[in-house]
Image (cartoon, rainbow, N blue to C red; front, side, top):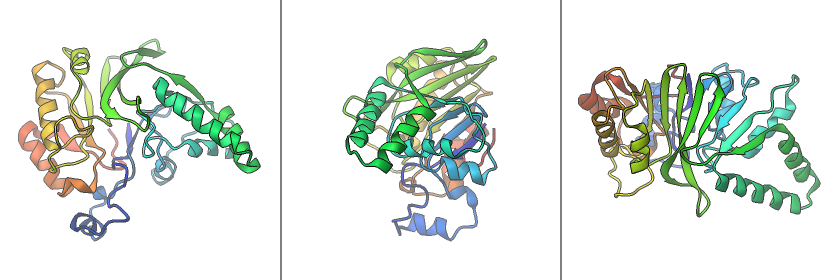
Length: 288
């Protein structure tokens, strides 16, 4: 598995910001601090999110995306889904498979409305690109807590995240992957887990847990759709209590923003003081 990106929507540093945090990162020699928008490549066939940095990250890390079969979209905020980026499939000189994009029904309806708006514009260049995209990938809707089968021993369960997408009724999806006895839960974007999410995960020991940590030491109000270090700790402690996080679980924090207000090492040290070395901040290019 490879983290193609580990930042929130504005990247780290924020290109339009000159705060102390962003200036420090610009002048730092620690490459872990420079982050692109979040995405996780599970293997050559399966990817979580396809944001605007997916192509450049793949090029940087020497990744061939021509084998992708499944892209699991958490929600269609612009840092997680880049519609026209998938259009570059038509520029391939080989014949890659047609990937399936999994997303909520509301997200799929939003994309349908967006593409129809573009088609209605009757701009020849634009409409031809939209028509090309329609043939390059397909969309499959998935409901929260629905389980999909990717193979004989490979299941994916979509879980409802505590985060609203672009549309009034669109919510994010987090994903539980179970492949040949290995469990990974990817929780980004989300605030504190919903009760039904804790219930589904209860008693299921995770091998890997990927949590978002957008705001670091900036304490968020109750009910916010993102996490800070305090809600991370609350979530992990609850998962330990219910047997979802065990001694062998590896925990990675992603979706970091300049609002975190601390360095990579400071953020990680705070969490490791609570949970030991099984928890760490991810960085772009980290392989697990």
